[in-house]
Amino acid sequence: MAQQNQKQSWIVLKFGGTSVSTKENWQIIKNIVMKKIQTGKKILLVHSALSGVSNLLEKLIDRAIKDEYEVILKEIQQRHQSLCRELGLNEEMVLPGYFSNLERLIKGIHLLGDLNPKIHARIMSLGELISTTMGFHYLKKNFGENIKTGWLDARSVLKADSDNSDPSHYLETASKFESSKQIQNRLNLMGDVVITQGFIASNNTDETVLLGRGG
Image (tube, rainbow, N blue to C red; front, side, top):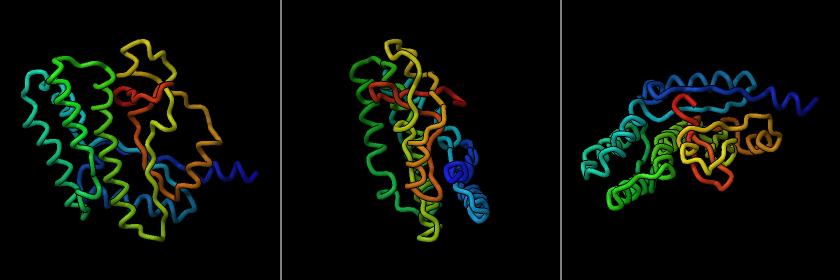
């Protein structure tokens, strides 16, 4: 019975890109989460990349081979840095390494003159990873010590079903969704609110794969 009640204490809240792209919307999310917490629930908060960022990443990939990527790369970085400042966060502490990693991957595409699905998936995953990192730090800052907040890389718990010998597997796959006591126990240890992504998973060799748009 205790295990059953523990399962029931968790609820999932899912927010799209528009919902996480402004300070005003994050204040709404904070209030929603707070109200759910006050009813005794634990929250698994799943949200997307900032509105339009996935499209910008696709455009960035397309322009990389043509060596026309600098402007788009800068736009992506500025979008996130601007929201970071709006949320009262220190961008250098909150977003370490993400943009240098993105730039390195894009330059690699340009130098090789080729794009493989593995790199494509890694680049696209950054939209969700960056946005959820920002969301985690915002809620953690606002909730303080009263509500324990955690961040979960979905790739560590979602495993793809499909065969990774198929190149298309990296860009649109399916993931197992059976109930897992191991994952539930891990979430319980992470806190009252756990933020994660809804677009990415990993395969049986721990490479990044995408669940597809809307996944």
